[in-house]
Length: 217
Image (tube, rainbow, N blue to C red; front, top):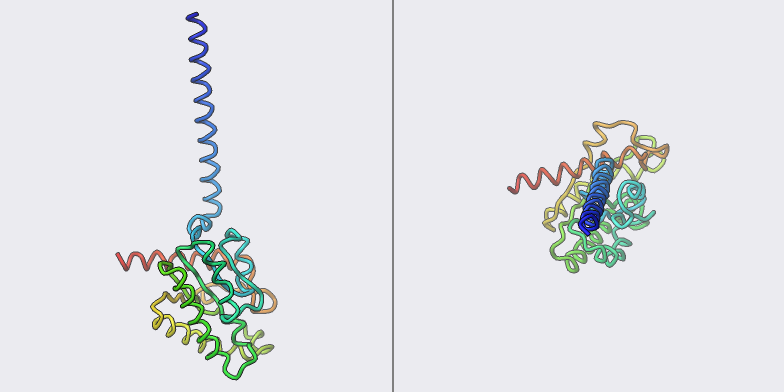
């Protein structure tokens, strides 16, 4: 009888030990996964809204964290607000404008900024506690400007974005330093980016957010 009790206790201890080892293994795998891709953890409660420039971001983050459509403009992005709301984000990062500058209207910059305000106000209305960050439109190569001269208006458009951000009391993130420090990020069209761009992009934003928190503290 005593032997049976001992065996039962021993088997129970082995079972607990095996379960603990299994849990430790799972934790180790999670840690390794996070080490390989720390962005999924940092941006887990974020949504990135953009045009075709951000489509490749889905290769780094979860699909649910990225809403990017080819040809998207600030006007068309207003239709995505409900999709943003469904994700219940704490942060919304918006990078639009590259296609807005090509929109066939008399004053594409003016129209775009007006629609940008509508987009931001709609997000604020449905997610009053969310932190909204507007990112500057990335520059393009000289060759791309030769093909499409309207891209020369990107610097002026970014100034308008920065002024709008001040008025709307939201965060503005300047991406220009990325391209000053890193060459060869563009694909052949001189507009879209190679996969190497996105980790640099996310690191830049992460540093900006952490710096802002330190300043607030």
